Image (tube, rainbow, N blue to C red; front, side, top):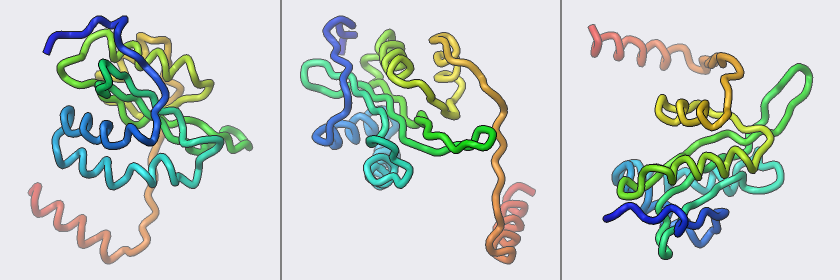
Length: 166
């Protein structure tokens, strides 16, 4: 399929009626298993997210001739900065159909960046480079901590992993 005229592509806010088309896009980009996982988590992650601040977050789709060919999405999260807890949009999924890659990804990134004051995420290398090129910046290194609820289960998993590696 030829690359479309970038001016013919519409970038707009996601509508609930786009959901099945978005899952098809996931399948076209990442395969069936990832599409199934996206479908399982979609309502929880976006529509029923307990951190929703004003809406379901910022989700934009790109459309060409009625077909969803790209998507960039965020969901609301709360972070603590100093002594304040603030709502931020957390960048999650960023997809462009393989037949339409090129400037479309940049237009999607521009849309999400220009529409939000506070956006964060943990991008893969390719999207991180685009983020920096589009004016984003690295705020800091974030650390992840885990609280072990059941030590016996944790140790059993750890030993199993060591046996596979060793």
